Image (tube, rainbow, N blue to C red):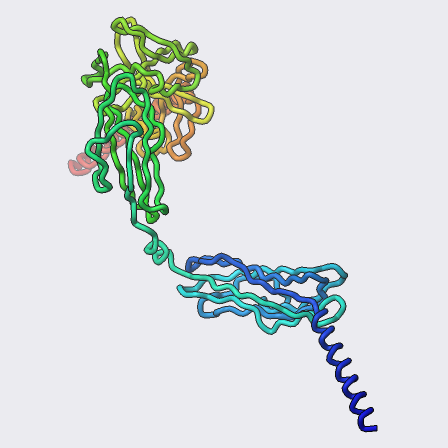
Amino acid sequence: MRKNIKKALFVLTLLFSLALFNNKVSASNSTISVKSNNTAIVGNNITVTVTLSSSSSLGSWDFTVGYDTSLLRLVSSNMESNGQRSVGYVTKNGQTSKTYTLVFKALKSGNAKIYVYGETVYGYDEKLMSVTTSSKTVSIKTQAEIEASYSKNNYLSSLEIEGYELSPQFNKDTLEYSMSLDSSVESVNIKAKLEDSKASLSGDGQISLIEGNNRVEVVVTAQNGNVRTYVININVEEKNPINVNVDGEEYTIVKRKNALQIPENYIETTVTLKGEEIPALYNEIINYTLVGLKDKNGNIKLYIYDSDNENYTLYQELSFNSNKLFLLDAEDIPKGLEKTKIKINEEDVTAYKIDDDSIYYIIYGMNLNTGNKDFYMYDSIEHTIQRYNTSMLNKLTKEKDRYLSIVLVLSFVCFLTMLFLLIEVNRDSKRKNED
């Protein structure tokens, strides 16, 4: 009998153990993940997403998000209870995830941990799920601390011109180089490598050349913003240069069309100077022909070429949205305006002002789209222009002069009246004294 009881107990224990084992194996898994950026700046906000997910349908859940209150302050949250705790449930079968968004403000430097605790998750079948949680640690620094960690390395590890040799030989501490090329060379390929991959590089690659000196700048900017400039002076032999004098300065005619920037409404053409065909640009609307002049430093600007008088005038084009103006010296300046100099689009230009406190200036020029010459009002704050109504100004000036004349006449009449009264008062006083 005892043996039978022992056997029965053993079988029942075995069945109970198997039931527990099967229950454990069949239990669904869920995860609660915490995600955000790895770093943050003191004073800025940090957005954190907390996601509950499972391979099977969710039923209900309860968990809380914890964080380091000395480093973070909760700004906003869509969690159901006090912004940190979520006690939620689904209303229909099939939902397998739920995401919450929390926004924290970074208070001070440190490593702030954001984590999940007190988690309980049930499936839609009301069975308890196993839960795996994750946490996130955000490195918080001040802007000064971040910038102090930036690399200061703004050196090149190599610099070369493909197919040619630099003088002197490259050294990362040597900032200026030179070389001479035949007049047939129109471009070179500059190769440069950074010593620090966090730095940035500009000025390398295929470079178009003009005859004479070409100053090429290869600029390295370190991660912290420090700039180092390597200069290569490439002298291209210039055969039979054509030199001209403009306003007392010596210039050289540009003979390569790829060195000229073509303004809108201009087409490529040529002019003949000293027996040579020179690249030029022509605008049929205003009948201007432009050529390129290069100064002693290699800077190129466009000049209006007057073939009849063999002279050159600097071409100064200003763009204002759809309007393009070529500035001219005004022949008939409206009365009441004073001539001055201002900067427009980094160019020094002649303008006229109404008074010292005004933000508006008057400029005179030719509209390059129509060929019409006119006065324009320039807004020095918004950098816009509109045609200027000179007739209105003249009318206002005449009105002002008329009122000024009236005031002067009235003032003179008042003066005479006062003088007459003073004389009469003086006479009365004398009569009384005589009596």
